[in-house]
Image: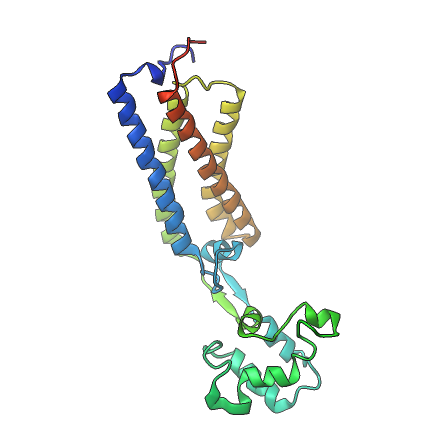
Length: 252
């Protein structure tokens, strides 16, 4: 390790070039995070980014709407058969939001049926302790339990292509960061730990793509690995930049 040259000993223009490249790299990571948000967010058919988006991307999600299952279990028992049939037909259709309060449906609109038969228990001010936990007063309340999901995972060919692109490029980038760190004053145990977490994060992220295809709960491995990899990448780049511009000190 002591034979590696120090980045701080390079000429000003050389250090400036490395600084600019680090900034471009940081911008690339920011763009990757933004692309991930655009590409994956909502994959579970629910607004916003969540772990289910990752599960949907790599494993797929197949669930039936909780509201639909409750109706099929004959809950509530007091619901008229005609209203139950109307709600089941609505929940099995593709116009959950559009027909929820459709004025053309009159008293048969799902919002009207739910208001008549459900809100007395499933309301925020209800005396029913269990019902209060699942309010059905507004569209956002109902939509959270009204959507059945059948999300197919990315095809194997797409995951192979993504693995090929990311494994080669990111592993090469990480090796260069490791080499750059060897040319800094930051050579202690903390740096070694950061580098180890960095490598482990990449393995968990990319490896998790394949493991999650077989076990949906391993989507958490993708998230943990991705966060670890991005966070340590940022920290390593900051340490490189610090070495480039902090006052020089004697070699250890």
